[in-house]
Length: 312
Image (tube, rainbow, N blue to C red; front, side, top):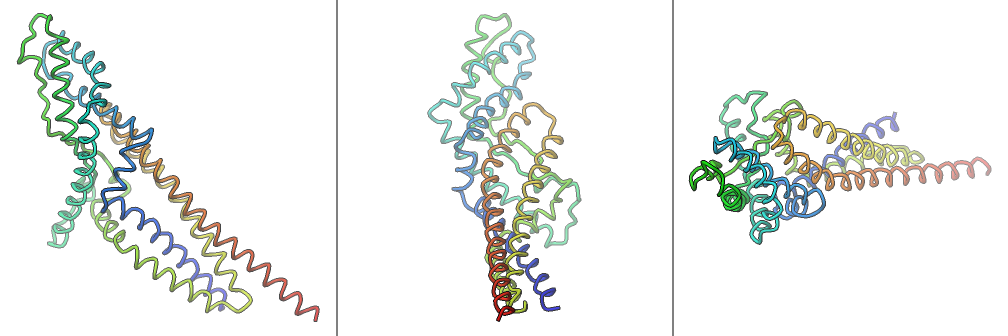
C-alpha cells in the first residue's frame, strides 16, 4: 500500500515538475523581450520569415491600383524589391520593434480579456481575442516606402500610370491576424487561464519537489527507487506528448489560415518557434530519462543489497 501511494505521488510530482519547467520557459518568452528577439530575430527560419514579410505586403497591395497593366507591374516590382527591403539599413531595427510590439500587444490583449472575465462578461468559445496578432507597423513603414519608389520607377512608362495611380493603398500600420493558438485547441478563456498558470512556475516547481520528497518518504526503504523511476518516466512522457501537441497545433493553424500571403508568414514563423521549442523539449525528455536512470540504478543497488542479506 505504501509503495502504491508512493507511485501516485511520484506521478503527481512528475506531471507538476513537467508543467513547471515548460511554464518557466514560456513565461520568459511571454514576459521578457530577449527570448522573442532570439527566436525570431536570427536563424534560418527567422531569416525566411523576414524575407516573407515584403512579399506578403506586396500581395496585400497588388490589387490596389485597379489598373491591369500596373497591377502586373506591381507583382514584378515586389519581387525585385523584396531583397532590397530586407537589406535596408532600417529593416533589422524595424523588425526588432515589430517583434516587441507583437509580444507586448498580445500580453495587453490577455490582460484586457482577464479584466472582462473578472467583470463577468461572457467570452464565446470561438472568440479570437486571445490569438496572436503580428504587429508589423515598423516593417510596413519601411517596406511600403521602398515599394512605392520601386513601383513608381517600374511603371513610369506605362499608359495610365501617374503619381497617384501607383501609390499603394496599403495602410503602413499593418496588423496580421493569426490563429495562434487555434480556438479548436484553446478557447480565449483557456488561454487567459494558461497565461496565469505560466506565471506560477516557481510555485509549481516547489510543489513538485515537496510531492517528490513525500513519495520518497512514503515508499518502503527498499523501494524508494520506484519513486525516482516513475517520476522520470512521467517527465519524459510529458516531453514526448508536448512534441506531439505542438505538431498538432501547427497543423491546425496551417489548416485554418488559407490565405497565401498569411501562410507565407506563418510557415517560417512556426518553424522558427519549432527550432526553439525542439531543443527545450529534448532537454525536458533528457531530464526525465536521467531521473529514471537514477531510479533504475537505485533498483539494482537495492536488489544487490537484498541478495547479500539473503546470502548471510
